[in-house]
Amino acid sequence: MASVDYPEPVRRLIAQLKQLPGVGPKSAERIAVWLIQSGAEPSLSFAESLLAAAREVTECRTCGFFATEEGGCAICEGEPRDSHLLCIVEQPTDILPLERSGAFRGFYHSLRGRISPLDNIGPEDLRIGELVKRIEAGDFVEVILALSSDVEGEATGHYLAELLGGFGGLKVSRLAQGLPAGGGLNNADELTLLRALQGRIGI
Amino acid sequence: MASVDYPEPVRRLIAQLKQLPGVGPKSAERIAVWLIQSGAEPSLSFAESLLAAAREVTECRTCGFFATEEGGCAICEGEPRDSHLLCIVEQPTDILPLERSGAFRGFYHSLRGRISPLDNIGPEDLRIGELVKRIEAGDFVEVILALSSDVEGEATGHYLAELLGGFGGLKVSRLAQGLPAGGGLNNADELTLLRALQGRIGI
Figure 1 (cartoon, one colour):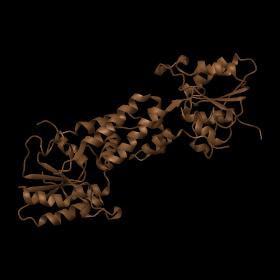
Figure 2 (tube, rainbow over the protein chains, first blue to last red; figure 1 turned 90 degrees about the vertical axis):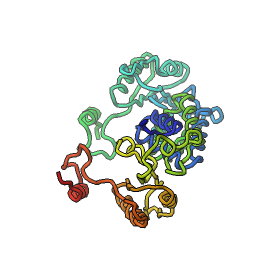
Figure 3 (cartoon, rainbow over the protein chains, first blue to last red; figure 1 turned 30 degrees about the vertical axis):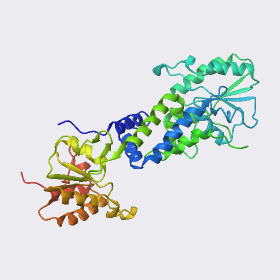
Figure 4 (spheres, helix red, strand yellow; figure 1 turned 180 degrees about the vertical axis):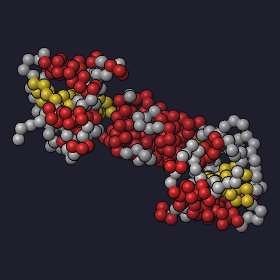
């Protein structure tokens, strides 16, 4: 006896959902069933949002943040900023958390990734050419590397520090590493404690 | 200074994704960013699958499993089955795991939920009227309650056992409870062990 399965449109929806990052087979099935059982409306407005985002959202050619044809880039074309400061991030999604900290009001540059030999991602796959042109054309005084504190982030940071060292007078800095706010010593791993000790500050 | 946020289509897509079951704010953001960065194609084919499922997939009026206008219901209109056996499940998604067990080749009836006073779901909200009509019209000999072994599942089972007791000659059974396959005693909770002891079988 042939085994019973979901109708083809259900199977296709589950397959699509499974491709999303962080959605496994079980979640994909649960979401598909929820969508189908909720009637047509949620699926229609979901599909509309997908199409609108695919149609309208672009990447800002300057900084790499999300932009729209209509509204432009909220950072590069938004309220005035300090044109001497440039903060380099791996992903456009890293920009909002930094903005919310309230500690930085310069410009940003998203690399759209980081150097990762295991994933076959080298400097030429990142927005580094754009970065160099931007620094050549602008009047930046300091570039802050706001990269992940893991192996790939550090490799990317070393590469950029060397590259940017070639610009006379340009200060290159990176984010401090140490204890996260609210974190006790017993929750911190050894590497974090090592970094916190190395970066200790006189009081 | 006004705080920077994602462009409106990105925010709307994130809001839509957050409504899906099991998708939190962080996952919604990650999925939205992944979709946007993957270019238009994945979003377009995802939207297409959503629209196709919303347009084509219906609920089988007999058993409650997913069906399509074109293909009908793979269970009620599929290969011949034992018309004396009816298995009652809470959700259409409960049907495929039972099918895959290979231990049952009768018909199914999905209730589309279970009795849950806390969620304001009573018997009148479930497909119980349809169930009664089906049993009256059919020649079922045994009805198997394949419901969850939690409070709501047991409440639903008690209600149905009483209701179906009114049909002379109809045998009503429920799934066995006990140790899951491959489960050691030290992983089983007290209630599971209680049920396993109560349901012990002579060898």
